[in-house]
Every structure is written in C-alpha cells, then in structure tokens.
Length: 161
Image 1 (cartoon, one colour):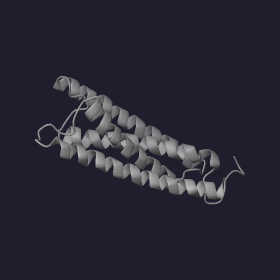
Image 2 (spheres, one colour; image 1 turned 180 degrees about the vertical axis):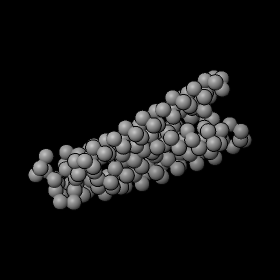
Image 3 (spheres, rainbow, N blue to C red; image 1 turned 90 degrees about the horizontal axis):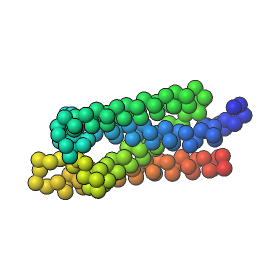
Image 4 (cartoon, helix red, strand yellow; image 1 turned 60 degrees about the horizontal axis):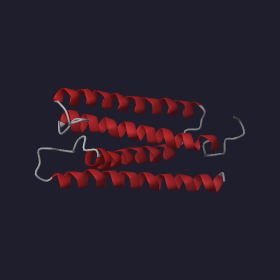
C-alpha cells in the first residue's frame, strides 16, 4: 500500500511478519545444523534414540525434512517482503537468533531431559558438561536475539508509534 511506507522503516504492517519469518528461519537453521553436525558428521545421536538404529535414521529424515521446510518457507516469505520493499534485515536477524537459540534451548531442556528422546552425546562419562555447553550456547544466542529485537522495537515505537 502506498503511503504507509515511512522513510527508513518497513511498512508498519510487516514488522510482525519480519519477526516471525526470522524466527521460522532460525528454527529451521537450528534443526539443520543439529542434524548435519551432531547426527550425521559426528554421529553422536539420532533425533529419536529410544528405538532401533533404523527408526533413528527414519526420525532423522523427518527432522531434516522439517528443517528444510522451515528454512525454505521462511525464505519465500522474505522474498515476498523484499518484493513489497518491506524486508527489515535487522529485525529478521533478531528473530532468526531468537528462533535458533530458542529451539536449541527447547531441545536441550525438553527433548534431552524431560522427554529423554535423545542426549547430546552418549559415549562420555561427563554428560553434564555437554548439557551445560549446549544450553549455555542456546541462552547466549537467544539473549543476543532478544537484544537485537529490543533495539528494533525501540525504533518502531520511536518513529511509528
């Protein structure tokens, strides 16, 4: 819509879409990196380790498909935002960091500890150090994402609100 665009800011109606597509991309990226690095390259675990190796491989396939749907889907939304001249890279990156850190924190707490469907690593005598490293990394990424989003929120309130 013409007339809604403010100089230097995306259209107000797309502020939320920039955030959510960034979060979706971050979740997909976290799942992709987890799948490639920890599942395939290091072979530390499968997505679902409470059954046979075959079931673990199948669960990894579904997990990998999910990661691609999330990342590619979010990039289609980014393309739409760019076409509308409403893409806000800083807000999108903040959302992506929140999605990435939030997904890894969810994975580390809910899937690793509460549901117990897999652990970071099995062939170690000190799993706690891996749990702390996993969750601390997630908290740092999540915190940076929140800080970036708070900066963009100030900008929105200062110029639009």
